[in-house]
Length: 256
Image 1 (cartoon, helix red, strand yellow):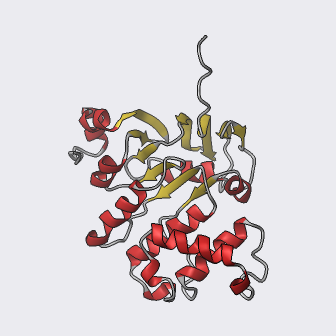
Image 2 (spheres, one colour):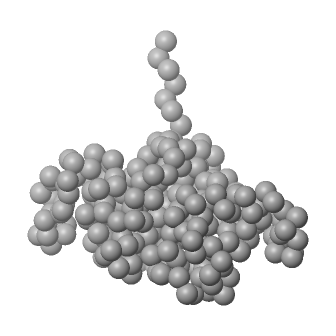
């Protein structure tokens, strides 16, 4: 007896977004399996940000469907998708500069548990919140900065904190929107190392311009051009494809 096919953790079917006469996302269909390490790449204006905003509920599609763990979430708002297991980071961090990393993560965990009202005042009596926040700080390599105001810590550490905030939602799918953007070269690989060490229980989609990071991270890659899927396949296959080099204006992808 043939086993039933595994339900993808994230799937789009014929996804399309039009802004008047401009087609920003054009008939995009893809399936993300559990434990995926997937990258979404494409030249500027390819529609990557629009696609991420559709997946996360910031925008509503003109046509098509979005399924999360087999459930149709096409019309659900962003916060409901987070509750159902879809989290994201942003190109520009969304952190509170006056909070510490510990306070930030306690708030994120409390929000997930529906305990955000009066979240900090009784925190000493909420050991479970502190424990989980502390574990995330350790896992992301930012425990030493736990009590410093976010505004005072290195930008690379802020990016790691944003990933920790997303993980506090306990997602099954995490969309990482250029997590190394603006980060000094010396800190970029630390971010990728931390992301690569995340458990397979979290399926990852990386949206990134740095091809060296992409080909180091991704097992599979989707290439987006003019709002549509140009090609999709194993990372090594995409890296060798001459059409991908043409898409990047003759630039040789860096991989290995």
